[in-house]
Length: 243
Image (tube, rainbow, N blue to C red; front, side):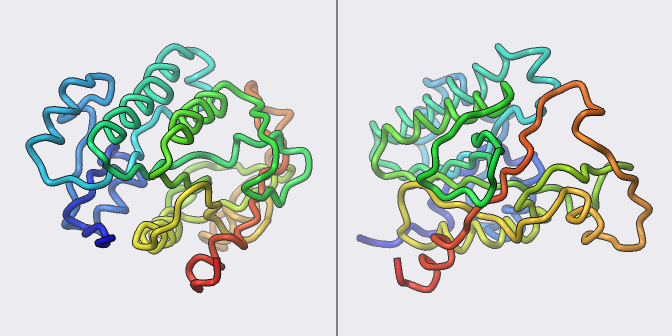
């Protein structure tokens, strides 16, 4: 089967943090956002695909703020579940590959070092909505789900959790890992991340000179899992050609 070329990939969510970073790495791909293509409008999606030479959809577009989703869960249902289902239906009908970005928050967070086969149990509505999208993607065989966690290259907050563990990396690192995986023929679920550490340690690694204060998860008004660190051995094996 001919490898999908960069200019044959449609990327949704182009104006988001990850979308902008991917664009610098894959400049020849086709980029859309809600102002140019609404994933809730299936007819518009189909018209767009028919008029292009797209062979794959890299679905990044999402509503990603846990506290905002607690206030407006229906928007998350529409964007993260219905919108993703539309992408899957579109790709199934036209024989396109689906690449979906999911979150480490699908796990309960009670043990960490989660593998792709470990049971999922989200602790907040954001994660439930992303898991809903993942369920839609899993209904389609020609798909790749990348569970991950990333943030800006510069930590944007004054405080960071000292009691939450993660495999989060800066977006530039995660985007490079994703592009390498996209160029493989991997399917199914693959974890993309870095080493296990607290969010505080992650934040300090971005800029050791920045005075970041400590924060505990009990001090916020929305739920976050304690340890969603990811086991990324499968990713490493795929890139080495051993999986």
